[in-house]
Image (tube, rainbow, N blue to C red):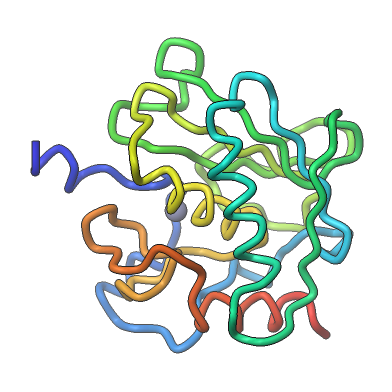
Length: 197
Ligand SMILES: [Zn+2]
């Protein structure tokens, strides 16, 4: 059981940060060329599909945490809406049977989309230009007490953050390596770096 947990990761994005091999970043890494939401994050609307309704508390908690990290001001403001029209983030719950991209060690993943409903890059690959909206999929087959972290972690990807090998970042990729439950200063600072300029 322990080994299985050890292999679980929040997301399967093949991100170059892992090459850092344990180095600790003062600021959580952002994606190459600092790609991000093309519309910024000051009016982030999010939609929870019925398939993700069991994650509502985790999603609302994550949203509140990113808006108010406890580390000072950032430009994020988030509003829950009842349709996925023109939203920034859409949440879905799927399992390995309904989503071929999920596997039995993936708690969730984030994908990046254009205005016309096409992917900016194949699932699992880092986008190379700014994106209009994101989809966050929870693996319902692995629903567990870590889902509060997962929601915050995947939202971080949606905002444009990559993995941080530090255990003291919500963007730490390993489920058993991560030692925090909330957005940290290093994560907060990257939001201001990306959007507050
Ligand atoms: Zn991740």
